[in-house]
Amino acid sequence: MKSLTVIKIGGNIIDRPEELDSFLMNFIKIDGPKILIHGGGVMASEMATKLGIKTVMHQGRRITDLETLKLVSMVYAGWINKSIIAKLQKLGCNSIGLSGADGDSVPAVKRSPVPIDFGYVGDVDPAQINGGFLMSLLGRGITPVFCAITHDRNGSILNTNADTMASSLAIALSKDYYTKLIYCFEKQGVLSDPDNENSVIPLITRKNYESMKEAGFIKDGMIPKMDNAWYAIDKGVSEVYIKHASNLNNDKGTVLK
Amino acid sequence: MKSLTVIKIGGNIIDRPEELDSFLMNFIKIDGPKILIHGGGVMASEMATKLGIKTVMHQGRRITDLETLKLVSMVYAGWINKSIIAKLQKLGCNSIGLSGADGDSVPAVKRSPVPIDFGYVGDVDPAQINGGFLMSLLGRGITPVFCAITHDRNGSILNTNADTMASSLAIALSKDYYTKLIYCFEKQGVLSDPDNENSVIPLITRKNYESMKEAGFIKDGMIPKMDNAWYAIDKGVSEVYIKHASNLNNDKGTVLK
Image (tube, rainbow over all chains, first blue to last red; front, side, top):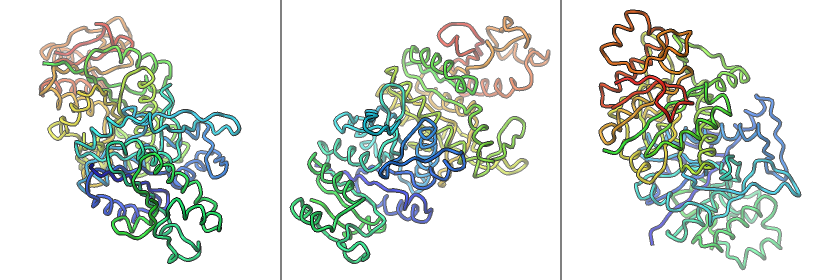
């Protein structure tokens, strides 16, 4: 079975031009078909401030009204996505920038307004992803680069969490590829001591995960990330990595199996 | 030879939601492979004002500094392009939003800063367009929707004139298709009397074009549009139409042959 690498990067890379350039240099070294998913970074919030749009968050997730939807589509699907594509083309990596609306690749369902109305936010069912279209691109040697924007098949785009966008894509393609999902992270990996970058836990199994959670090694923002990762594994993804982008091409970091 | 329709729309459609919806309803009725190219409209200028970016024009063409490049990529490749794609998907037209950087589809050369420095503006050589990639999309029944953004193959995106983007795409594909290029226009067509919408000239040949220009029937902003059209015909495009979007599916308007 052919191998596929699905990589998610966030603001800590996107917001720093040198980090981004160096990440992309490492990214193109990955053999075989690959897909990149990028988040948004601080640019959306900066642009919101300039445009007088209030950023409203609920438990770390942005509430997306129509003005905010416009804003994130502009920043994520426009400037960030196209800048990455131009850089990859320069590096000789033929790539294509996509939202989930493009080629109907990633349809989503607008989240229920109860109990919290997140506005134009979409949740993805991996079974609805148009894997055939993505495989046809990968088969032509074209690397898809996704921003975390989807659509509702009813005429509207939707803002989507980039971590779940990445796991959904990895799950959808795991029927046809041996799929590795890599979350690039601001730390070296999952740390047993959050203040010590040398305390990376190299391997987390389902069994030791539960005891780590109980013991308080894994907490706060790491829990939804880890839940996403286990969900991906349950649904067919072969390996999930949580690591620093600078270690993309080596073994450092945490692997979940 | 299979027929291909390449259609360009501008601000007069994009800026009016009902016009856009009704245009897209007509657009999907066109049989066979088709490509849409859209300009920007007033939203870029509105956004520039909100962000405090000065809009500098030279002979009707925007001068694109880095901040303006960010802005146009956000508005054209982000919000406008993805909104159109979501609408087309709702109408059952599988489409994909592209800049010229995506799939290296439309590379361009940054315009010389002499005599006027237009900044990040790119000119397209139709011979450099990646027709194979576009044909593979068309062959899968996917309709490409282009914003007028290209790239320099050296890591930067470039702002490009939407009329020439449309003619360049039509020229590049005219080797493989019987190609019709349609410029949707705010008037009913080329008018012999600019104040009379009933004075549409139905057919312009190369021969009567010169005499019309001499007689002053064709002037100002129409001249570059017409030059673009004749250039397209010289390079292999079969028919060029200049018409109002509401007449997309009928014979009204001007045809150049």
